[in-house]
Length: 319
Ligand code: SF4
Image 1 (cartoon, rainbow, N blue to C red):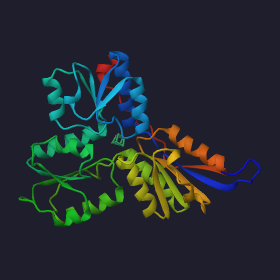
Image 2: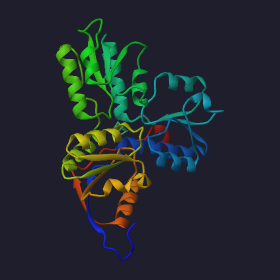
Image 3: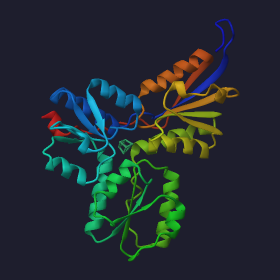
Image 4: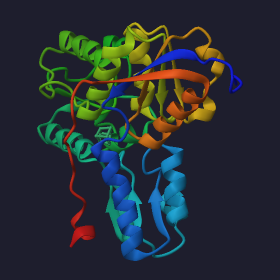
């Protein structure tokens, strides 16, 4: 770090907006906090409520206990399902055990679940465009009986997948994908299966769309993009990819300021900063504070839109 006397090198920070928390993440965190207020600790949460360690640790301090499966809950305690959604078997198991459960599934994920059910009821086989193993994908596949959904992850998958009845197909998508990659996959599916049904665009949510648009807008002006988010956060990882494919030479995902490798900034004049939908603004501010210690910074915030989306809490917590 430079001494107090040494002149700091100038650095321009382009701050992408919107960035960070979306309405679905905000709602999920509020559900856990309200449940703690109403029922007292412990409140169990199945899976990380949102993919961010800072958020999880803060809620743990308030009395939340995170588990991967309901079987780990030792008794009759309230349980919250994470924002990513859960297979139908999970609420069924909670009901069987007579557990009080609160579903923090983002309403935009629930919308995809409903689309899947409507297509299935119409006799269509579902193609889900998404990433294997992501909890949202597991939750969406788990809305329908085994074998009703085929997962397509890449453009190559879309080019080779086959179906028993190609005239009875529909596609749905994970909400946090790269828009450009998804459009490519949909184009291949539509070309190979012209009768395939699907949403008007894709199911990628407004928050993912806006964060990617903001990164695209600043990418070419940045020598480096820092994306604040967790390694298991799908939308954060996509922001790194979008930055690189939109003209930013170097882009890194960091969970917090302490993960920045200062060698990345050795020849950088302009750094872009954004945050995934599950990363709180405090982590962005900590990164800016660290940059301020080392550089003579100028901050320019570039906003592509102002978000006003807000989701209601479940009635069980507001009545
Ligand atoms: S990223 Fe999109 S789908 Fe996921 S919680 Fe936020 S608004 Fe909902």
